[in-house]
Each structure stands twice: as C-alpha cells, then as structure tokens.
Image (cartoon, rainbow, N blue to C red; front, side, top):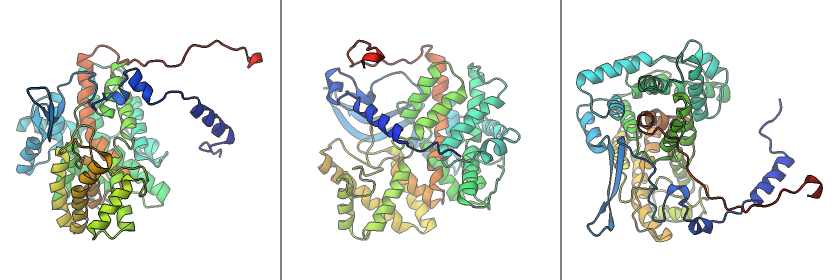
Length: 452
C-alpha cells in the first residue's frame, strides 16, 4: 500500500519555497489597521454580529469609560450559569437537557415541557441500520474528532430531507445530532481501541430513559455501571461546555458556514473541525499531559520545585517547550472563569470519592502559584486565572475517561450552542458572511515560461 503520509524530497523542497514566499511581516497588521485574529489592539473581540444565545462579562465599565476587571460571569439566554447549575443541582437533577432546551427555545422548560423534550431526544437516539458497522467499524480511525465529523457527514445520506433549511427541519436535524453524538463518539473510540490497540470490542446500546451523560458512561464502560456522582459531575461539565458567548472559534465557524445556506450536517462538521484544534477544544488534554510531565520530573511535594517548574514552562525549558502554562488564562476572563470555579468544587468532591485528594491538591497549588508567575514573567496585569480546561481534564481523568474522548465530550456538549447559533443565523442574517482581506502583494507582469 502506498504511504500517502510520506513527506517526499519534492514536497519538502516545495514547502521550503512556500515558506520563503511569505512577505507578510507582523508589523504590517498595525500599518494597515488590521485586527489579526479579530482582536483589536486592546484585545477586545471585533464585533461581527448580534446574538441572544449567551453573553460573557469580565469587566465593568466606569462612568468615565474606563474598564475595571470583575469576576467572570456567563449567561445562557440571560440566565447566569451559576444560578442555572445551582438550580438543577439543588434538585439533584441532570441539567444538560434542560440547558439544551433553554439555548434552543430561549426559556426554561416547565416540568412537563422538559419531560416531553427528554422523550423527543430519546426517540432520536438511534442510528440507521448497519451505520455502526459500515461507517465506524469498517473504517476505524485514530482520531475521535475526525470519526465524529465523518459520521456527521455520513448521516446526511440517511436524511430524506437534508438540504431544507426551514427552522422546523433544522431543529429536527439538530436534535438528532445532539441525541446521537455520545454514541458516535463512544463507538468511534471502541473501534479505535479494538482495531488499533488490539482490545476487545464491545458495543452497548443506550437505554432510552437515561440522560446524555449517563448514555456516554453506560455505553463506554464494559459493565455499563457508573455512580450517581460520576454521572452528575459529567452532566455538569457538559452544561458548562454547552455554549460560550458566541465569539469562540467553532461557533463563529457555525455562523460563517450557515450563512452560505448549506445543510446542517456540513455546518456541524465544519464546527467539529474547528473545535478539534489544540488552541480551542484540545487544551484540557494538554493540561493533563503537562501535569504528568511535572510529576515525572520534579518532587511535587515541594512548592519551590513546582514554582521552578512553572517558570521553566514559561521559559520554554519544560514539557512541550512552547512557553505556556496550560489551563491558565483566557482571552476574555481575567479575575476568574465561572466555569472553572464551579468545576473546581466538583473536582474536589470527586477527588474524595476516587481517592485523588493529593492530585487535586497539586492542581490547587499550581492554580495559586501560576497567576503571579505569569504576571511577573509576561508583564500581564489584567489578571490571570484558571480556565475551564484546567479542572475539566482532571475531572475526566478521575472519571476514568480516555483522553481520546476529552475533545469529543466538548463537542457532545457544544452541539447545544452550535444548534442555537445556527438557528439564530438562519432567522436573522440573510447575508453570507464575507470578510475582507487587504492584499499587500504588488502587481507584477506575467513572464512567459521561455524567459523565466
């Protein structure tokens, strides 16, 4: 079989030519007043649309127009996520389905509405005949996000009305995808585990009475067993990953692709491709691996050694040598990330059940030391705090979830926000999103091949 992944001498030569042809210098962005990454010179996001789906607050505006950082706040359809999570947790209920309903329909469901909605999701929680065999088991892959994206695109072929972008049809498609995402991710992992890791293959079918979090745990584990605390904490993590302000990369991708008038499967597949990137959805894996490297190379009972290790991370002398302390800092939040605050308490509870108190204590130590070290080394004074990735990776590891599923779990959660934003884009935009780029290459004459 031909090795299509081989970098041949020709490809390397042409890549070198391509790299040498880039004449765009960093200072040119300022010269042309171009906000690279859609961030202005103060780090604010460039506004590209309007939304009612969610909102982030990280600063207060004073009467003189100056900005003062505040504790981070996150709102889903105007409801503080702290209040939302406190509400269903105080009732000892699962919250993801309620959150999905809120994001889609802009109001909290009554008890009867929630019951009807859960039944609707359960009714979609099945895959076409032979889909698992033909689309997942016969083409096992090593990356679960790619398998998930491929499976989403394949479902287009099983939809008798795939291209209709009327709101009822798009809503149907969104509910279908939300309901089957846990199965697609877990079955993709099982195929990888069997065909690439030589492990036993087992495919468990979901119980229609279970919540999304319970479906994931029950189909993933050979025994199908899980504790109530495990399921409730995974459910909470899914709620906190369900949506985030509309300006994140994968949600913006959803808006851009939706604005072209394309089908739901293509839009969601594009969002999955965006989320896969380590700068977006893959960060919690980096956090866990960073802590593994820390434990392998220093005495983590010594706070002085931990501090030295964090400095070496920023100096590009440790771990992946990219100069980052993963899980610390956020593009918007400064003093705190509300999602991280909530997950921290859950991680503490779970560490007691799993006997991981020392591991949790190490995370607490890093969370306490890192902000001052970053502020000093990077001269950052806006405030740095743990973000949602800092504790989510720890929680997933304590839940004995494979790292291959960390980012797919993000997708299983974020399909809620993507769906709400896709519907909002269809309802309100009516124009294709087409940004402008400034060309900085001067015109030049065509040279006949005989004279080159």
